[in-house]
Image 1: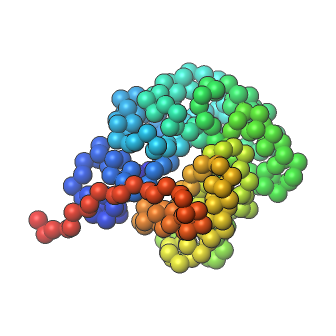
Image 2 (image 1 turned 30 degrees about the horizontal axis):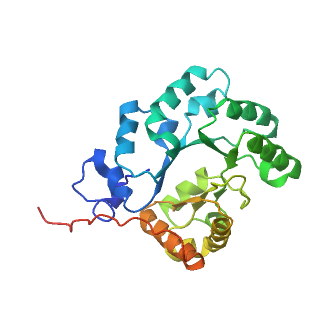
Image 3 (image 1 turned 30 degrees about the vertical axis):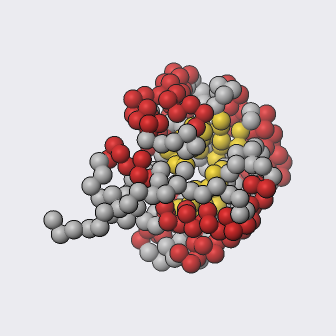
Length: 274
């Protein structure tokens, strides 16, 4: 996601054509979640345009199509995966293949996941997000999944919603997220040298910042270990997400002074009457 109506005139120039908004977003953040690929595989020319608008250090965490992960559960998806991988080729090693699984995908399905991951091209990074409670609460299921991911060189992507579910929703956006988002324990264990974290805060900036405090320490420790983490920060309406991402980066940099700076955003023109 690199375009949001509420960002125009704040984080993205209001007059910027849709086809150039990724370039402006890349001035605020150096990674993006690719959610649209869940619904349709983009044209290779579209992905090539994404590559041209971003620098060599910019990361794409791209969600696999739902026909692969949710509808067919990895069975008979060879043609769909060939088309998907071909479309992503312009991104090269900047793309992480993100397998997000439904809550119904449980410990009994791990073997199918492992076989699928091992068939992916060896030069493609892969990451998996699971939502079945058993993977978080049953040590045997946790170990089973960690073993399958480690064998395939894949990362386990935690989606931390603990702060969001700490108290009842107070707005329409929070009520909508309350009904749709998974309620799972926080997980902070990395399996690879490029861990990925997804965090959901609240409408309140103060609550969101307070809730991510444990992650600043975890991420700083990862950096000290030589890992290269990617962190995505969400709120129910995502209106302030780019600014929050930079604030999180500042908090981590206070613990890791040598951390590289984020890019400088391009100027956003002031609003006019005409």
